[in-house]
Amino acid sequence: MQPLSIRDKILHSRLFLGTGKFGSARLMEDAVLASGTELVTVALKRVDLETQTDNLLAHLQHPHINLLPNTSGVRTANEAVFAAQLAREALETNWLKLEIHPDPRYLLPDPVETLKATEELAKLGFVVLPYIHADPVLCKRLEDAGTAAVMPLGAPIGTNKGLKTYDFLQIIIEQSKVPVIIDAGIGAPSDAAKAMEMGADAVLVNTAIAVAGNPVQMAAAFKLAVDAGRMAYEARLATAANHATASSPLTAFLHEEL
Amino acid sequence: MKNFKEVFDQYSWEEVTAAIATKTSLDVQQALAAPRRSLEDFMALISPAAAPYLEQMAQLSHAATRKRFGNTVQLFAPMYLSNECNNICTYCGFSFDNKIKRRTLNAAEILQEINEIKKHGFQHILLVTGEANQVVHVDYFLKAIALIRPHFANISIEVQPLDEDEYRQLQEAGIYSVLVYQETYHKDRYKEYHTKGKKSNFYYRLETPDRIGRAGMHKIGLGVLLGLEDWRADSFFCALHLDYLQKKYWQTRYAISFPRIRPAAGVESGKYTIRDRELVQLICAYRLFNEDVEISISTRETETFRNHVLKLGTTTISAGSKTNPGGYAVDPQSLEQFEVSDERSAAEMAAVIRASGYEPVWKDWDKNFKVPC
Image (cartoon, rainbow over all chains, first blue to last red; front, side, top):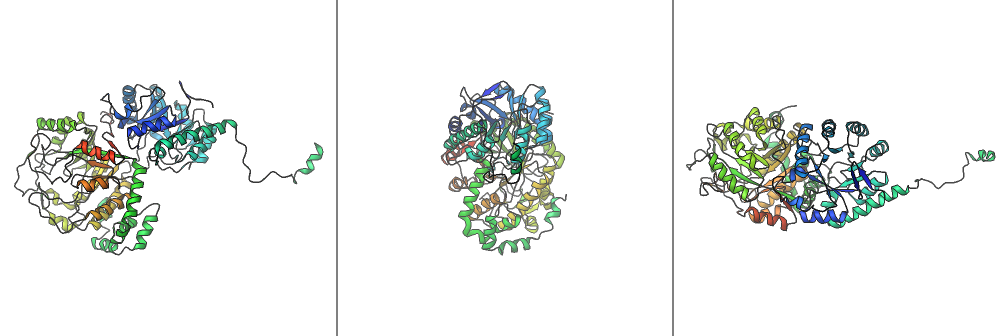
């Protein structure tokens, strides 16, 4: 399988993990390891930046794991830029998962503020991965603003509803010059496989693993699904058809001229 | 859009009570089966007809809470800054006519309390006072917040209702959320319980969440004081309030608390008691009505009750609480607002949370998140 490259990083796993909602930090760590992921997102608000002994971070100290701090909780571009700078200083990374969802009910991303923040953060040297609606036009605008990737949603965050935005994701994947990471809504390994088969560069999963009966086993299942989906994409899927191909009564007369 | 008074005045207490009382099993079954639940469904779920469905409600509430909030429980500690109060609330230990020793913490005392609370690992704190505007006013809060903010990730307040610009000042000073309970939505009963002081103005209190919302606060906490009136009708009005606020102030988070009247000095227990079984029904009904509202359970409740409701919809829990100003370090013997039922320490509570398969979350905000002005 081809590795995924985003800016200066080469990632061998196309599965990214969220670290919230787990029953314990230890369980989160075990799931992260079982998933084979190399990129995990951490809510800045959950990390204790002042002590050196943050429980969440202590369980993510593995050489192959890259941290992707996120700005969950901010409501505006200004707040996001400020939080990003805190994250860069505290976690020593210029990678940032930009999340601006002022609506606390469905945590839907604010496209206006997200575009504004991306422009500013890109200028400040951040590698920005914004969480957005499956909006193809917004993706192109973010590319122009200097985004490192786009992270459109499959369904509202935490709903496990799968790829409800399928048609729009297809357009995004078709048009995008930057990696497309499908984030939010992926509820089952089959959803992840589907996303990878359609050509997504990676998927990000949290709730479906954290809240599963056995999060570690579910993480391993997602690893297999993402690998299978990617391999299938690279192998080029045979075209699906509704009917078996029969003779061609409508064009048979042309054969004479062959 | 209208303010809440206009919405509220369209309903009559008697009609709401009757509507709840006449809900049937069929209404409850339809509510349970609905993918999204309306206020009508909420009425069915808090009605006597829903009692036989309690286990099913609990299962659904448990699953919905895990899906939305994960296997986590947020911990916080209350910090009482003052027990001075000009109101006469016939159910409250701090009531003006209650002859107790009054105390408002000064800066040095606040720091002493902070120090003790921090030792237990808390990052989220709730500041509580009575209503004594001549001593405990916005300037006092701002000074207290300046002392407290460097030490905690997240600060909430539960104080007297304030004006919109006062809330805005508090928000800018670093307050994340404001809790204000209507106590009861029964207008006449409200007047009987709140005989004197600024609090006797029912509608000023009723419109307080609107003022908090307009001020741009991150979170608003609502609730009724269970035991003042019929809990079902009161809770319907609280859910109506929540529903109205959530549509109007869509960038704000919401939390519901379930204070049940506990024994306190000079207070008689009332006739509108809510039983454990009914409180569980109410908690689950809120969760089924609103999958993203935070549900907070205080140390008013007993160990056993808290151990179990942890899994039934709860997202937030206090522990090791002292409900008297200076209760942690300055003056542990002073008079409490209410008697704490669950006296377990923060560490003990965290262990119980872990043993239930949940992660105790100490920090879920950052004091630096707001852009400095």
